[in-house]
Amino acid sequence: MRRHWIALAATALLGTSAGAFAADEPKPDADGWIALFDGKTLDGWVQRGGKAKYGVEDGQILGTAVSNTPNSFLCTKREYGDFVLELEFKVDSKLNSGVQVRSHLAEEGKEVESAGKKIKGGSGGRVFGYQVEIDPSDRAYTGGIYDEGRRGWLNDLKENEPARKAFKQKEWNAFKIECKGPSIKTWLNGVPAADMKDDVDPKGFIALQVHGIGKKEDHLEVRWRNIRLKELK
Image 1 (cartoon, rainbow, N blue to C red):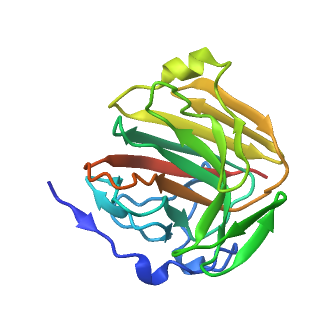
Image 2 (tube, rainbow, N blue to C red):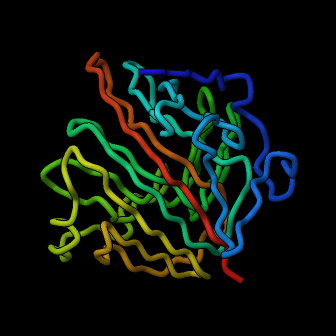
């Protein structure tokens, strides 16, 4: 099995403003879909936060947890506002993960204020913002919306049993995420999951999370593939 690890630390603090990375931007197809991952490289992405390993394997982005490091994020260099995002993921049953949308970075050594919260940028910076949860635990909140690094749960799945049952353990699962104005909606394997309105962040980057595992040394992985986005007008 071919494995290709990508070194990202040197670019961890690059900016994220729209248009700043024109050379890296993928082109939309005839239907307006943009492939955010080319299946071969991590071009267009940058790692922030912790030191989990990100690489490309078999046409997939592979995230591997590393002990004694905080949450890690592989972030798009470009920001997106209104869009539909589709992707597939497969996660180890013992690893938490998530997909950030309209998210931001508190740079290392700096403090920012957002939604009434002060956010400090530690080593590698602190990613914060809307996260579509990947939760293989018995709680089964995959598809719920958590405000990473800021306000906590915004739309959990306590009252959405169909969505909680839609998650497939140790198999590929599909997300559809729609952000349009203050509305954020998610679907898990075609089942409606979160549906909320929040106007704090009209745009930001997209990111793939590998959650911290503390002192554990377990080999835990999460994979993503077929990542595509259509901007809404």
